[in-house]
Image 1 (cartoon, rainbow, N blue to C red):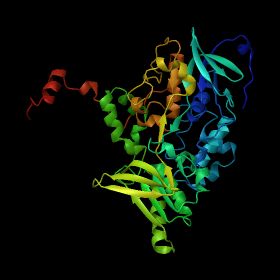
Image 2: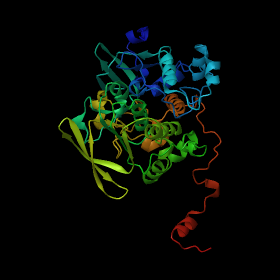
Image 3: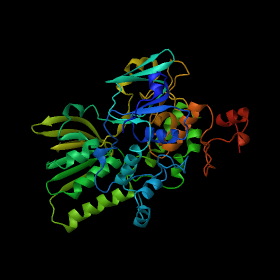
Image 4: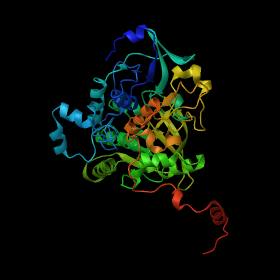
Length: 452
């Protein structure tokens, strides 16, 4: 979709907001900004069209969040860009409801996102931002055939595949990240395959491999975790995907945030129950019901120490943290389901020394999703999906996407255009001020000075 230049461009007036990257997060922001005409915005994407995780769209994969947590519904349910509006526009609302999905197919949600991306205003594809410079009171974005100016920026380039150092020298057709799984697996003719990573992505790769196990002799699935654990999708646990939890989390110290993030990890990074059942039942069938010579090994508590070439194959040195032992694995192919990491786009290279980073290498974010940098406060740098450590585990998920976009719009306007206040919480996270004990008493209690 191409946006025509207007008289404003000719007059060289800066945009209020320019977005780098068009993924779900910036797409959500673009949708909400349609209701705020006073904010002149434009979003840029280097790819020629919208495409959401194409390498992971394997048959049967599902969302791990509700379809109501779409681009707009939690803050603007009347928007024409809701998931329900998509179903109605495609004449399949009733069919969708009758399908009674326990979880929405990821392919369906990807089609919804593409439908929105083809309709919402202010998006420019095929525009690779090469460099961003801050000059006077604005940012200057340069691309191959021109430039754009904006008072504020929002980075929505998403996370990049993370490849451990031990695997980097071997990347290629038979050693690859799961983000390439759809295109790579179909041509993979390896007798011995090792999948590294025990989360949902690793489970989806294993499920796909087991679906056609005719050419495999050995399949080993490695996880650092104590077991191949399910996502904690219970009602109280899901409260971490709520605005009230984020607001409580923001008040924690750095160490407290780290502890809270660790304690809630399985609300986000666990395996879907349907994936677990599918893998277990397939292994059962291959072992007991079908003539198969596949040797499948599911190996939790393992950590790869080293990987090296062994002729045309690989040798992996693995530590077993369950009993401290060292194991050697041999593989003809290795699939890395090792997650993603946020990184600032290369276009911000000239600004990188002015942007503060935390100890995890993420930009240091204020509560309103602006990066801390040395430039003027009137020129803000917003970041989407960069607040896993500052704002909590929900920040890298779809669940609070619309609420975060609404918070960014409110920050731009300096007023509460969208109602971003938390709902009435079922759980009380923070110490309530009215019931908190006096400071002196609390200090005495912590020192063990009080007796019952």
